[in-house]
Amino acid sequence: MAQAKINAKANEGRFCRSSSMADRSSRLLESLDQLELRVEALREAATAIEQEKEILLEMIHSIQNSQDMRQISDGEREELNLTANRLMGRTLTVEVSVETIRNPQQQESLKHATRIIDEVVSKFLDDLGNAKTHLMSLYSACTSEVPPGPVDQKFQSIVIGCALEDQKKIKRRLETLLRNIENSDKAIKLLEHSKGPSSLTLQQNAESRFN
Image (cartoon, rainbow, N blue to C red; front, side, top):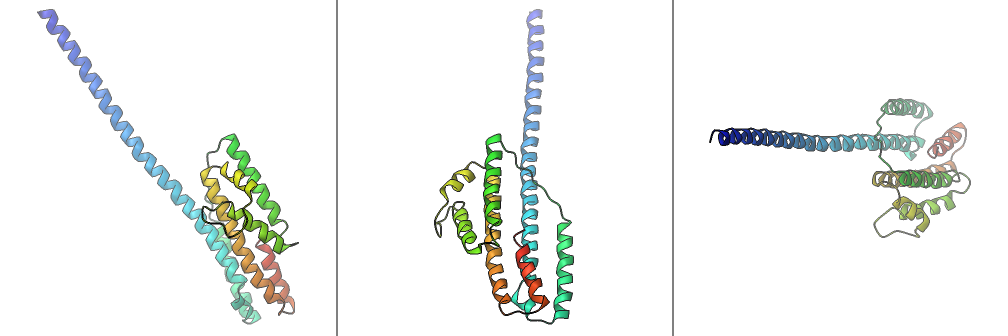
């Protein structure tokens, strides 16, 4: 009888320890789950800041190359450009980097996709019309909507091999490039009606959008 009681107490102790360990493990797991949500929220916030930086830089470029800037006095234009350059400089001081975890295949796909886009960009000033058409086919390969034109099937297969975050960044870059082309088309048309040093400045600003 005494031995049975001793065994019962020993078993009870083991049960309590086991139960306590299970509770502790459950609490730790719950804490990690909550931290995972915060980590993802942090990455999303940082990505949003990255995108906001890109948008701000694009808007500053757009103002500098706008028709309104062309229709004011040289003194006013110079003053506004100084302000725009100051804002651009301050924007560029913001450094945010969200690293994407990639396997070797995804890394190679990203390099390949980036190389293709860079090759198209390098031809902008030589043949803007053809480069724009090529860029549209690349963009059509990245959208889930009905494409507005031909789809570059080879590029599409490459993008599919990229990490999901990289796919989104590639699409955003193509969207930005297409907008820049549209804005630069307008700036170049203004050049046809411009004369003097200010014409050269406008052309340089238009070309800088593709660097």
